[in-house]
Image 1 (cartoon, helix red, strand yellow):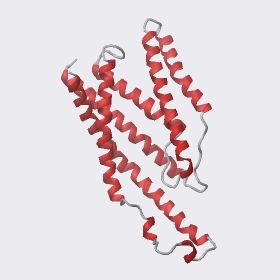
Image 2: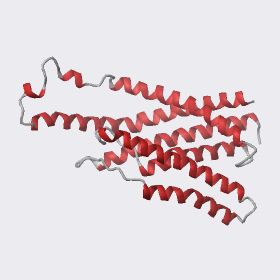
Image 3: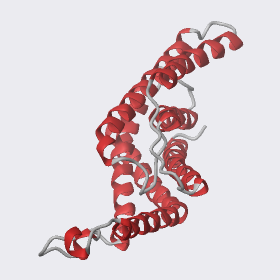
Amino acid sequence: MITKLIVRGMLAGLLAGLLAAVFAYTVGEPRIDQAIALEEAAAAAAPAAAPHSHEETEPAGHSHEEGEALVSRDGQRFGLFLALGLYGVAVGGLFALAYAAVRGRAGPRSEPVLAITLAAAAFTAIVLVPFLKYPANPPAVGDPETINQRTVLYLVALVIGILAVAAGAATHRYTARSEPWLRWTATGATVLLPVAAAWILLPAIDEVPQGFPADLLWDFRIASIGTQAVFWLGVGALFAFAARRRSPV
């Protein structure tokens, strides 16, 4: 039985990953191209502004071609579909294991509703909570010297999101006999309090350079979280559809 669930999850994850890749390609890729163009323009303007000659700034035996990307943009676009497809397979399998662990023990009794609820909880914990504190940035935004710090802080926010959602689910379960308003209030407080504390206590990171277009930054971030939303919605909906087909209600 568990094998069938894992296969179902992997297939749902694969399809959801491809759907997310289509969204990212359509909505996100044009913003990445704009950001890369800005980065290249800034890099081209830097040598012109420097008070050194061409010979001083470019060592012998080196050429401008060495600064070019090792993978073309077409290759990166293909890699987008490949990466999200493989990501979907892996996450779909883990989603099926989590679904098997909570089914009959927590959450809605209806299998399709449980699948949608679990996907929504995963999106909140894994994507939304870290994104609200440390949103994604396009190329040309971010200091390479702080990448380790940013990675650690993002992982801390991720762990807090997972723990907060897990605590909220436990609170919702243990207050099952309480009044509905009290149950949902306690659940919401259990989730929001650690998230709010993390928002206040974790250091902010703002490395957006002056003059970077605010609309491009906003559009890129919307495309980034939109890609994740499409993925998790796809995982939940496809898994729920398979569950409903397997045992009609």
